[in-house]
Image (cartoon, rainbow, N blue to C red; front, side, top):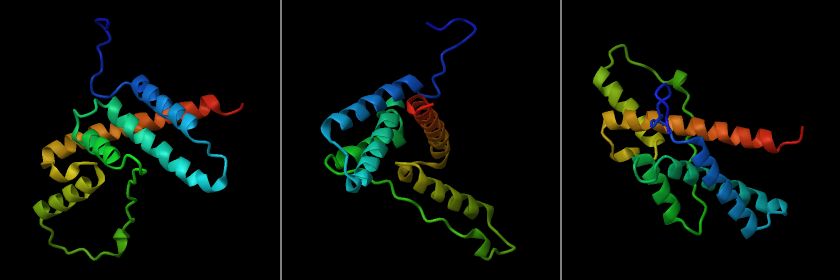
Amino acid sequence: MASADKPINTDVPEKDVFALHFLQSLSNLRRQNTFNSPEKTNDRVKKIKKAAYVSMARAAGGTSRLWSRALLRRAAKETNKVVRFSRRKKRVTWLRRRSNRRDPVEEEEKEAERLRNLVPGGGAMETSKLIEETAYYIKCLSMQVKVMQCLVDGLSPK
């Protein structure tokens, strides 16, 4: 129960929910496969990454958010395959020539399109919903990093 001076924060998923799902996934991975050989290291990394993203999507409410639905759908589509999250090539922006006359509406649309490419499931969102989902997605990614850092700190020898 929440006290009067400390309301429940419903904006960000609970860290313990993510940690529970993630640790269960890691435990299942450990039971399923032995990753002792060096050639299986890449496979292990991919499966851990998939477990982290699926756990984050489940902790965010499963299908209540568009990006979490997109992550879960991507994972379900490739049940026997590892979910691949494409890495974007970094653009060298300082080489691009910029016109002195820029249309602000066109620039906003370009920026929104870039954002749609970064957020899972962002392609079908209108701009205002995209901004809202992006903010929540960033909070969840931040939470994911903090929990994983706590796991590393807790499991590493001192």
